[in-house]
Image (cartoon, rainbow, N blue to C red; front, side):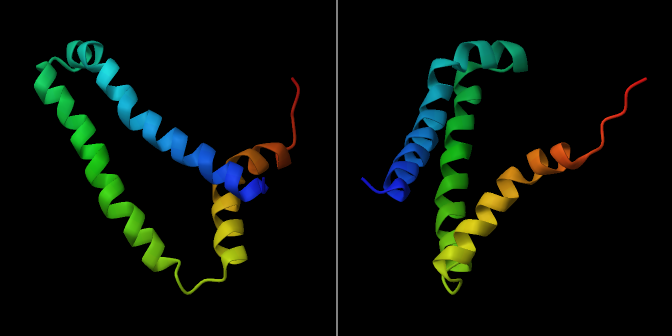
Length: 93
């Protein structure tokens, strides 16, 4: 199986899991925020609306980019913090 298919599958799994994970955590979230469980449940709706708006918007914005450019830019932005941390000189006191 191509690596791209595996990566896409893992990404979809992570997105679906992160949305559904909130349902199991509603009670502790509502306690921590001091709101009712139905009000905390609106977090799931907010996440879904963000995905509903964000996914097509990103698809349209990256439509004219070559696939390699879009892929490398997204990889670069997600790993930029790690590479910056690696490039910092270490100081010992």
